[in-house]
Length: 288
Image (cartoon, rainbow, N blue to C red):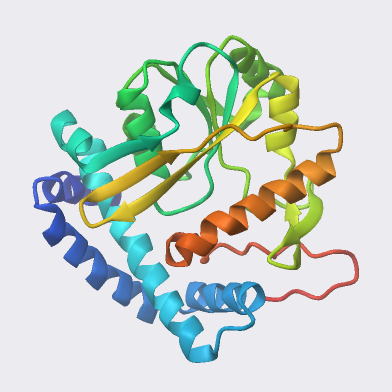
């Protein structure tokens, strides 16, 4: 019942002017910052580990801004998934090396966990005439699961793979010319992860970007979505040169280094509420 009510509310919010919706997101972000004590603590610890030169007051302000951006992006799904097609085209600015996405060459899109990741997916599937694929994690609530699926399949010809579909199915689509929208920068546990530096910390990282690119004989194109006052700028960057290599550890370390460069331009828009360092090297205590 609550899920149905929440979705109905978002349908209504889609009708609001963007400044009004962002103001509501600002209020929601502050409410979450105050009430979500455990997630606030996670974000503060992550920022202390990744930005040790910042003072405690600076980290607190950055945490506050990250909660606001998170909430604003969540409410933006109202118009991303329920607004008119003209609305999404007006508020999403696809920019950068758009030529890199043309043709049918295999492509793995590196999309880090910035708050605008759904905006980036929507912009690509609405504006680029290719069949995009991504890997979908089912939600526990079937109503919310169906809502997310419909939202992410709203535009274009898309395919959402379940994590249980297996690598061979995903690679086959990749080799057939369907770009894979990949989000490999979270901590997915120790299985198949390797430890590579992330802001100087040993971070368990799934080397899927390098492996999918190698198996799919694909180039890697980063797509970074930045929240702006008018919507989102979705920047398509130039393909990485000489990637992947035969060294999956070096490839994954390079991915994290490039990710740091992107985060440094807008640290408040990254998913700091995620327990990025929950998996620790043997013998090291939990940081949370």
